[in-house]
Each structure stands twice: as C-alpha cells, then as structure tokens.
Length: 329
Length: 245
Image 1 (cartoon, rainbow over the protein chains, first blue to last red):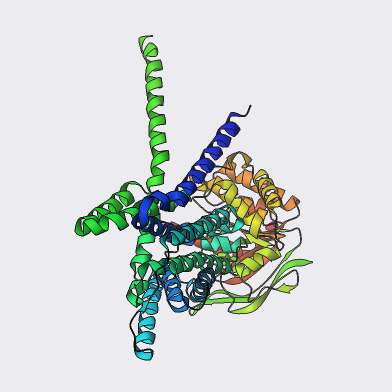
Image 2 (cartoon, chains in turn cyan, green):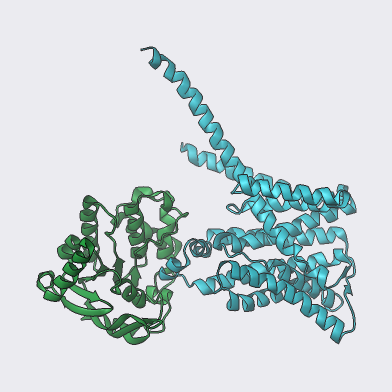
C-alpha cells in the first residue's frame, strides 16, 4: 500500500473533521456562550473575512492594498442607508456589489502603480471615502452619522459565518486555480508573467474587485452591531491595518494562516482592549514585531520550522550513536 | 516565407536612437543569430518584437499580421515567445509551476488543466529538467534557471522563439549542451531568433546572422560571410583594441 497516499488521506480526514467540529462549535455557540460572547465571535469572524479576502489578492501579488476599510465602510453605509428599504440578504448582496464596483474602478486606475505608490493611493481612497461621506452628510443633508437598528446577535453570527465560509471557499478555489497561479507569477515577476501570456492588468483588476466583495458584505453584517455609524467609524483606517497585521501575523503562505491570525488577534482585540487599553496596544505591538522579525512565514510557519528542528535533532542523535563505533576503529 | 518581418524599426529613448531604421526578416524554420557589441540595440530589438515597449516608428509583422500596438500577452498568444538576458524566472515557485504559467496562459485558446500539465511536462522533457519539477527555481544553478526559462517559453507553444543570450555565463560543456538544445527545438518546428555573444555557438548553429552596431544593421549573411566582413572585423577588433589599452 502506498504509504504517502495513506498518510495524505488520513490528513485530509483530519482537516475535514476539524472543519466540521469548528462549524458545529460556532453554530451551537449562542446556546451556551451568551450574547456578549456571541458578538465577540461574530467580530472574530469579521476579521477572518477581512484578513482572508485581503490575503486573497495582496498575498500572492505583493500589491500592498490599504483599501479594505474603504470597501468595508461601503458595506456599513449600504446597511445604514438601506436597512428599512430592502431585506437583509439583499442588502448584503448590494454592499458586496458596490464594493466590487468601486474596486473595479480603482483597480483600473491604480493597478499600473507599483509598490509604495499603490499602497499610498489605496490608503488615500479610505480617507477620500470618509471625507466624501462627511461632506455629503454634513453639507447636503445637514446631519452627522446615522442610526443602525440592532439585529439579533445569533442571526448576525450565522450570517457572518456564511460570509466567512463563502470567503474561504473563494480563496481556496482561487489558490488552486490558474488564476491563483497567475497572481503568484505576477508577484514573482510581472514582466515575465505578461510575456508568458498572462493578461496581468485584467487578472489584477478582477481579483482585486472579487476580494472587495467579501469586505463589503462583511461591512453590511457588521453595521447592526455598531448601532450608530458616522464616516469616521465606518471608514476607520483600523479596518485596513488590522486585517493586514492579522494576515501577516498568521502567515500568508497558507490559506489557514490569515484565519488563525484573525481569530487570535480578533479575540485579543475584542476582549483585552476593553480591560487594559494601554497595555494591550503595547503587547499587541511587541507581538507583531517579534513575529515579523523571527517568523517570516507567520505563526503557521512555526509548525514546519519546529518539525525541521525536531528532524535535525533526531538525525543528529542517530548519527551520534552510529559515529561512536567508527571512532574506535 | 518570412515568419517575422520588420520595416524601418526605430526606437528612441529620449533623444538616443537605440534601434534606428532596421529592416529584418526571419524565415520559417531558420535559426537566425543577432550579434553586435554591447549597447548595439539587440535586446531593445527583442523588446520591441515582444512589445515590452512600443515602437517609435516602423512596423513589425508576424505571419503577415501587424504587431504594433499589441500587448506582450497578446503577442505571446499569437505564437512568439521569449527568454530574457537576465533571467526573469518566478524565483520562489517550483520549476513545474513556472512552466505551467506558460502552458496555461501562453496559448490562444483556453487550455484545460490536464493539457497544461501535459504540455508543461513535455517542455521540461525537452530541456531535460523533468526530475526537478518540485524544486524552487531559485535553488537551481544558472544554467538550469535558463533551461526553466526555455521550458516556460516552449510551454506557450510558440512558432517563433526569441532567445536572449542563452549561453552567457555558461561553461564550455554547458554551451555545447545549449547548442544541442537550440537545434533540438528548431527540429521540433520552432523558428529561432537568438541574441548571442558566444561566437562558437552563433557560428555553429545559425544559418544566417545579422549584425547591429549603434542601433543600425550593418550587415547580414551566412556565418562565413560575416566573419569575412570588413566592417564586422573592424567593430570587433576595434573593441578588442579598446579593451587592451
């Protein structure tokens, strides 16, 4: 029997098993977790959506997008404006589509920019969206901010879970597809990719826009928990920086890296921040610096690194045992 | 019948004519060499053919179709593929994935996953790297990185292959192997246009050679004609005299 086939079959079973367990845990959580913790879990899933969708495009291409907050904020405002007009699932779709449309437009204009210029422009987009919303509200509408009617925490958790599952499935299939390969080749050498037949502009723009759909949808689902939003809350630059830090912290090389990063830091963000504000930010900063310095592949990179250490250690021990008789001869 | 033709091909960088009024043609099934001193405009000419940047004036046609205004990926899909003087590999990706990029995206039609895998493994066979499919390209030696570039270009199923200094930096054994490789590729029905500094290679395998000097084509002919050409001797001896002083 093929031993590697057996092993990988067992591994697949293990992965499938843990995914099912995780889904069951999240689905049953409101029964015993309480409302507050259900909100914390929803917020963690929100960060999973943002981190995974950010890593979907920026991970392989190396194009550092600071725009998540712009697409996320569009989702929040879509919910704030349409909450009484349309059913919730339709608003989620509208939020995703509006984010897609904006990303398409921005992508066409900016994806010819490279490196730092792309990062600066996408950051500018967040600031621009915030200022524009403020201008429209304050100058034209004579108001500042909007109420969002709170919705049932359990329902929001399940909806966010749905968005997260959709994001992960999209990320999984893109990684495995020819488009994932194209994104990687663009990140590795864009000029060579173009000369090998990759329509680099089209692939970049479309996948940038697809990743924005999930950010917009997550914004719609997050809005009811905020209860009141204005331009600063909806387009807070934290929604750009945190998901990036989470993806880097978890490790972008593998699909589950940003998931783990978002879950861990998202949990810390929601729980510790309330209790020890100053120390939390300090500890947060230190953890990030350490991870970036010593774990270039994130915390998921720790596993193969430790495996390798262990393998070398056992090899050395074995070699040491064999070497002794030779030394006597 | 020429597979590739250029008329009055000209490229200015600022006020400098890197390539000026060059007429050239490459016939189906040929191996054509392009030589000239450093800065003669050889790589620029390749970059114009593959549309890395646009022509200032003139016209390039592939199989009768005008290439002006097309994008690099469109030219690749038409059947013109290339390698680069300084290898532009996808360094962190394994060998097979490098070649798969060419296989998936280089053809005019949509390629199925199975077909792409078959094309990629065939291309790796041609360059004799089948055993290294899983190795990250950055871990290969220079000669093998160059072979990966050739395989990646072959996987796009080109009719015309532009090789930019395939032999540069290789040792004599590797050069002979590379010469065999180029001949083998031609025997598969692929026309070859190559920039090369290694004279032994150029003389050995090219049916026809073009010489560029300061962006202008100064002569063209069989290897024998080229080595006897007075202007060519002047350019190359002149260079050597400079180097000696």
